[in-house]
Image (cartoon, rainbow, N blue to C red; front, top):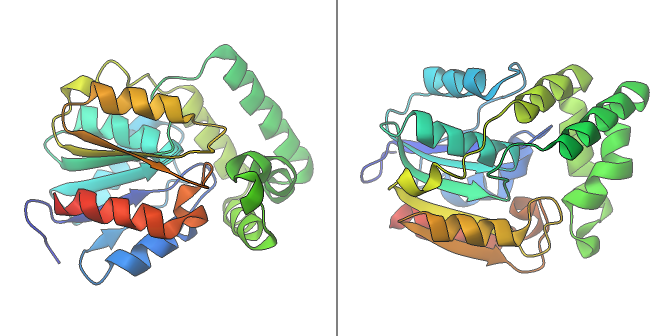
Length: 236
């Protein structure tokens, strides 16, 4: 259903993630909002991802929320298509482009995934930095592994290319005037909380929410706190 000045909510998943990343949010919001969660696995650049999301959406005016890769994509979409993005939620995301060290690490991880599979890489390495230490439970690790295995190594390669070739959004954030939520797990070891403090300070209509006891995958680690922040953002 439409609400106020946007038609629906689009959630953009992170690297090797799918709709399971936002299952608690969908459960909390779907009675009040129309929701779409696109599959970003077919595209190797943010430009292609952005165009596919907009072309395939039934919404003209969008409340756009993205986590990690999805959050970085959402920032680019807000810059490229401000007429479509009515409000923006940036969750556990890096506003800057990859540096050489991060690109090298991504290539190493892709080599490991080609050798042993994305599921094994996720279970053995990625989940250890995705989740806060106390949240590295079999249940949450299994969710991360299932999402990765559902995509496979070819999708991983395409999404890594999109991340490694993206442009920085940091200089453009002050120009986005829509209602914005900047949210981060306080224990996020990949996209640091201080980056989110900086983003919120740069943006004219942003609120900051740091989620206690959560790491990089805050949506499934502390879903009730994330849901509360999203509801407040959507109702502004």
